[in-house]
Amino acid sequence: MGLHVIVPVKYVPDIEKVRFDVKSGRIDRSSAPGEINPFDLNALEAAVRIKEKLGGTVTAISMGPPQAESALRDALARGVDRAILLTDKRFAGADTLATSYTLACAIRKLGSFDLIICGEKTVDGDTGQVGPEIAEHLGIPHIAYVSEIREVSNDRILVVSDLGDGYYLVEMKLPGLIAVTKDINVPRLPTLRDKLRARKAIIEVWSADELVDVADVSRFGYVGSPTIVHRVFFPSERGRKAIIFRGVDAVDKLVEVLIEEGLLG
Image (cartoon, rainbow, N blue to C red; front, side):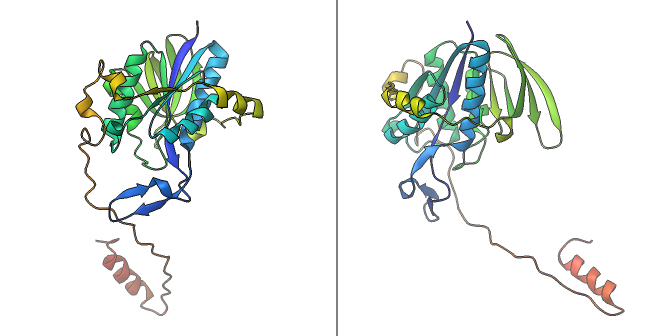
């Protein structure tokens, strides 16, 4: 039978071209072309490789504006079998909690699944929260910072998790969720035939109304987002400063500077 693998993907602006509104604390998404979140490409590749090994299907799901359809067509060109777009004004303004809740409700509506694979983070938010939060909403186990998939079967998965202080070999019973890093693989490039096929494929579009039987709509979008951005600022860039100490009192002067900088007590 194989596995049913679900990959949440996000439509993000080209981070190298987008403008940032400091006053409102928001990204001006209209200032740059959109694309599929780069970290999600690694998640898609991992899912497709599992399908190629064990069989099954891969479903991509995205919450965003109608333009996010292009990200899902990219996913279809890379080997995804089914694509679902969650788009509704009631989803707008969502923080990570509301986003993860909406995605989790859509996944619950899909019915049975075996594995959810998320990218480690998104380039526009950089929180790394949505994946683990989806797992918590669904009540399933999850593993973050997965840099390698060692083994996968119909009921369990063995992965390597890079937690910074070391690499951990972790086994998880399915269904579950993993969030993968960019070290896990090199995403394939879709062929022209794949792109043409994806252009003709059907993308299912779900509004908030499609989720009312499995969700509390008051937890969607801005209304369901408890996070408030108090202030946004750019950190000052300080270049390296060289100080040369000469003379017999050079050591004493060095000690004084280190104390002033708080590096010595």
